[in-house]
Image (tube, rainbow, N blue to C red; front, side, top):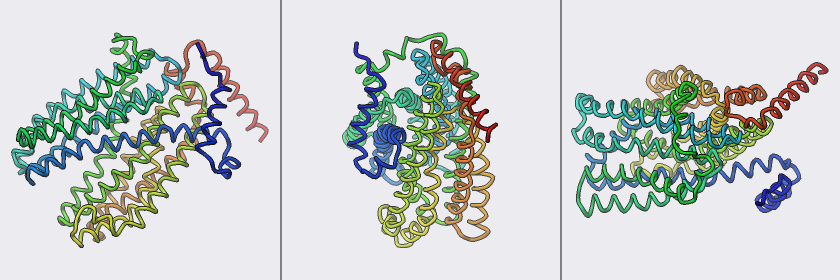
Length: 500
């Protein structure tokens, strides 16, 4: 059995680093540790970005085929998707974020079998969460009809309810893999799912001519495809062998500690998603042109947000792994490198968007007024996306298990500051839809500044101790060494401050 030594791994990194960071300026001015961390983050971010783009294409393909069935069907699909996203999907995804925290820390601490138990616990909780979701969506029919919506909207909502389980299971599969540093399988599964989804949409809508029912079935099957394909790949490559010991009664225990992380995560996710829905609602109160421009910028924002979102996921995994292993210095290094990388990407995106703002509207429409509105809104969004790109801070908080901080910050920032200011600027100051983005810009500037201050003032040794005491950290054989290391670090810090 060949086991690579730390020195061997370091030499292998040096060879790879020389190929990746070929610039001599980088070699001379960036320390090896920073280059190594940057390499690991980039290695995770690339596939994560591509897989998220492919995931986005699944509903995009469904939307294209819906458009061929008529405006009523497409509008029904759009409203049904918005309803299910706001009421159930956002909350479910938020609850699943606790799995990211626990898996990353537990895997970093080499408690491999416990990783499987955490996954089981997450599956049970999210499958139970589907029950109230179904009840809500079933009764949404009468609510939508009272609001004047067409019956096709509510019927479409009923037909796509079953996709909730597949969406939640897939999100847990992704959390399970990426927090172990396994990235490529979700990319392969997403690529295959897109091919199968396109074929399914064509067969059900064009060949069998099933109309609305066929579209809903294709939408549901597309989510089932990506879940099944990823599960099959995990089984085929035996990626689960080290961490899955079979279903255990332990998965029915410690739900309290899981929900302490899951509930703030759900609130954090919902507060962020809902504020953009409010923006669309307020834009619709102004005019159809304003609503169309708002929708176009939201689509651009969704695409550009994928870049920092990939870094966020990588930061969560790397920080959690480091804390689970008792290495607080590596967690700090990961935080610094990921923030710097996110800022670099945000500057590049801002330059691209700013230089192309006059033509972005042409992607969505030929109406000159809407194109002009989109160009005007992009002035504010170019600055907003820089600070919003620092959402990587959220990944750092997830890795440390400090979800309450962004949950509270999102509520105060988005609703007490951002939305209040946006409404004032939109209607009282008569800035119209531009006011929404200006208000949101002020919000994200304050939020990102707050996050960075908190991260750099965080007591990382204390956070590492909390992870260790929670049972997610290093295994029992290494616990004495970790405790001694933490005491030594604290003693040296005390001596240093005493002499300073």
